[in-house]
Image (tube, rainbow, N blue to C red; front, side, top):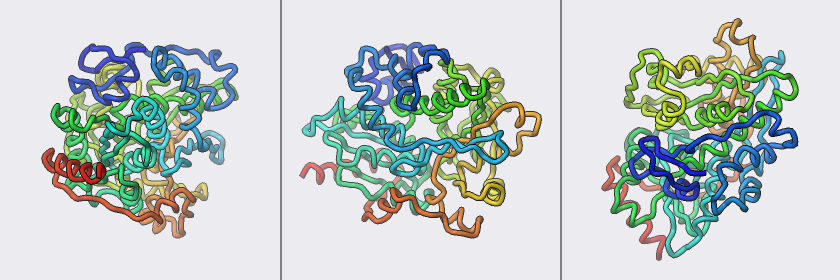
Length: 437
């Protein structure tokens, strides 16, 4: 299969799209044509690994990784992805936080690392993975690429705008991971990464790629847990479930929409944002107006210019079409707090602030919408990562998963920089000179 830029043609192979991360014209890579499936194509697929092989095999045709797909998927899906039906039977929770850094990003990051280390293993000419993060992406990418030969990682995150435990996950890795605290917002971090990727001199010097959801390698594996979850529900009930997805940069949501466009039995899709209203305002006013992000309790969703809107508009159309195909709602901090308390009181378990945006949206849909379909709420991160927010609201401690406890015990190190390309280039020059010994 070939991949093209959202801003033009210039088709490239999957391998090139994975390594480059972003197209030469600044666009994002998308499949030249999506494969189409029916539910019967998965009759012999009895696990998420089986489903993933069916979904992803067409994308790997002609790739140097085609024969490695099974091994890549074994590495990617090495932890449980479970669905818990909530009391009442009309709603389920898709738990995507059981990986090594307790966030849904572990799936995409692990898949991308498994692919790139097979394509790029020359330690004498390492590939440099640039990743801007609003909280969870950077930790997942750093963990996935930590100590992998031929790989360097630069994690760029907004200082003071992630939780303490998230910051620890971003800064506790080996010498092939450089963690940079940027004196600015996530949008500043994302702009820095895009500027670096587009700078010919720096790109040639450091051999850049990206591990944000701008990289198609992050999105492809995420389609598979929506495929698997929807297929299991469809087989059991004959009904297509709906999904409520917390979204910031639109990567996880776009993966679900991709799965539905490929023919998987997915019903309505609803996007929950926090107080960053770029997407809801676009759907309402039909004007795409990115703006500076605002800081919220759901920090990993603090995005004012979601990159994957470019992919979404290319796939489905502009807002006048999108709003008939995808729902959206903005949830503010007080509503997040209300939902964390309410979920704990009603169901007896804690949820993170991001998951709370999805739960709040579902709870306030109105019974005529809420009851017409089985809704699956996407739980994107473990609440223990946000203990300073969650624990005072529920009045008890959230147990630490063992993977997170191990990360919190590691020493951390980071470098603070201003949000300029010159500062980023200088920090990389200093660090990589040291790494090269």
